[in-house]
Length: 126
Image (cartoon, rainbow, N blue to C red; front, side, top):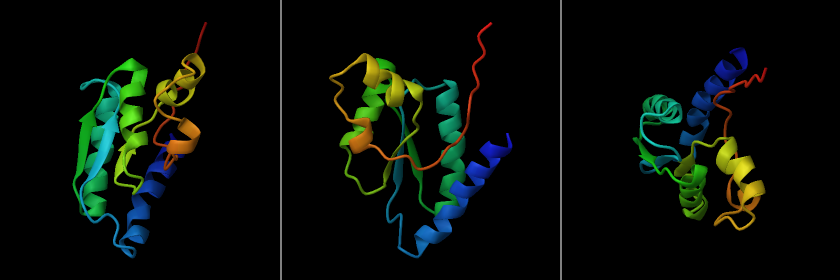
């Protein structure tokens, strides 16, 4: 919990540095690669709300479900690399899909860059 708070506070503190460079100069897009109403969608909308307050620019949340997150990740990977299109990433499109599907329409390492850690979800198998 402490790590998540620290990461979120760090992310929310960054906009003050970005303003010196006049970023963002237009609304941002946050692509959630899962359906509306899922836990990822809720998390994305909560973060977008806080980022909107801090950045002074609207964050538009777009749900692009399909292919275990592949559809949304492709939208972000193929977007103009200017920092105005963000992906709410998860293990599916970033680590599992590249191993299971060798011909993905995007290259995780070449086309996507991590920005912040928002949360961790421990999984326990008994």
